[in-house]
Amino acid sequence: MNMANLTERQKTLLLLLIRDYIDTAQPVGSKRLVEHYHLDISPATIRNEMAALTEMGYLRQPHTSAGRVPSEEGYRYFVSQMMHNAELPETVQHTISHQFYQARPDVEQWMTLAASILAHQSQGVSVVTAPHTQQAKYKHVELISTQGRQVLMVLVMAGGEVSQQILTLAEPVSQERLSQTATRLNNLLAGLAVDAISAFSVRPDALDQDVMTLILQDMRNTISRTSGELYTDGLNNVLAEPEFSESDDGRRALKLFGEPSTLQELLARTTTNSNIGGLQVLIGGEGEWDELRQCSMVIARYGVPGMATGTLGVLGPMRMSYARTIPTVRYVAGLLSDLVNDTISGE
Image 1 (cartoon, rainbow, N blue to C red):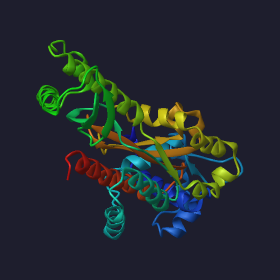
Image 2: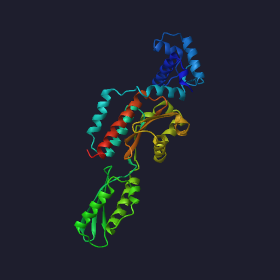
Image 3: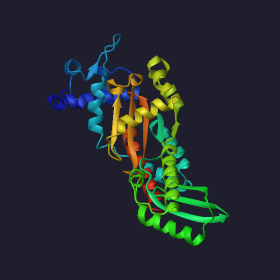
């Protein structure tokens, strides 16, 4: 559908009608547009334009009503106009960033807070996945002699994850030799990911070999352990909306929140190829997600590419307040990216 075919007047009327419908959830008639927006056009002309917009697929007419409501195409047009100019008021930005900087520097706190802020600002249901280390990268290892044949191995990854475990060696080894092994491995492996480390074949020393095997095991565990836990908030916000209280479609969408694996798959598939901070708006499930037929989702990725990334988003009725939700999702994604970045660079 070519949006360039719309005249300026049609564009204006379409945007006003959608804005009105988002506010009221009531089909919008020509008389309402003239009176409410003080338009300098006759209701008859507006009726003709609305008929043309319906013909083009941007509006539809519910059976029982003389007014029109936006179609999915109408919303897509509205969102394409909103995407770049929707700004979050500065006072709201300050409030949000203040809440984050007051929170403990703790991933779980950040996730809970992000979910709560998104739900509150958008009046929708929020979902946030914890940052997931796509590539655990080696930073350094320490080997500390404890007693007899036992050694404490402390492994630090580039994303800040730390794991400790006790190794039992075949025979006691001096702290000096342990430190030399750690130094050798640190020089050899710094900054490398699992695949690169497992490809190493030159390992002259049996102790190096044993420690390296355990390092790989640990790194693989870290990757599977941090596969992005889900945090959600705001289910009550949408339960009151007519789309959700009066139809099964709305309830089907909310069931997603009781099925974390489906929700994670949806988030993963929609953001796989998007840039950090890049926003996506799914309207009516985009023909792919049947559960979202009556809903819209605004989703963004955050984090540091190649190191640790997560996803956040808001689900609401198709007539959600895009003007509020889009900049909120964008802003919170930016804040979380900064926090993840600071954690990785050790600030």
